[in-house]
Image 1: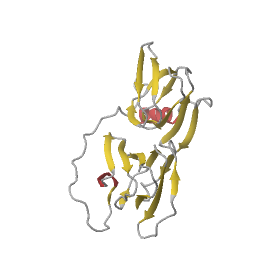
Image 2: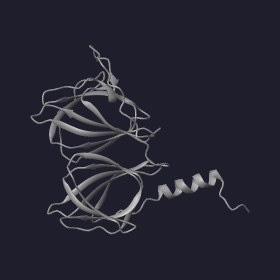
Image 3: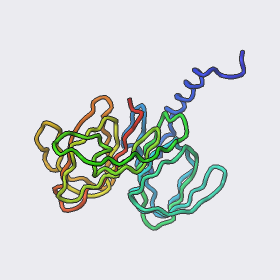
Image 4: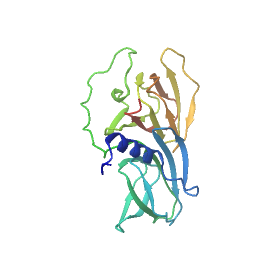
Length: 241
């Protein structure tokens, strides 16, 4: 018998391990969505709460509250840091514990990638597209001017979407599965290509929505009919096919 595993067996064992994510801790974690590719967690720590040591695979993180924390890694190294609400960050796999050093509850939305086989490789920002269609021709979502590119690697493309009151996006096409993390209370209308406008809907901060676009690409536009800006982080899953 050879001392090394064959590549096909190694791949099988890696994927099996990736599928077996750590169980959620009901006191602090809630599963918002899960499929064979990702698990979306809403994680909350109360004032001065300390988590136990726990592990995560690679993940996309949206901080929905301000935070002041102390992180302790598996090797005992600690780091104290603060961050603002509405920030996005990609975090590599690791084991740690978190202590909330503040007097308020902190919350994050974390999208865990079950089959992220290699460390994140960041991609540079694409060139800006000059000139937009003067008719109703749709554009790819990343080219719609209210959708601002902020991060990309081999797994995700992340767009910071801000739609001021009274403004309407161009028709744009989503061709990947995507996760929307809403960051503001706002009222918007949606119009699918070739259909009438939907009724106005109120969006609330920290709402999360998964939409399958890889097998059924869709084209729509949004109109802000409320009195406050519409703000959302749109996370396009690049390897969802």
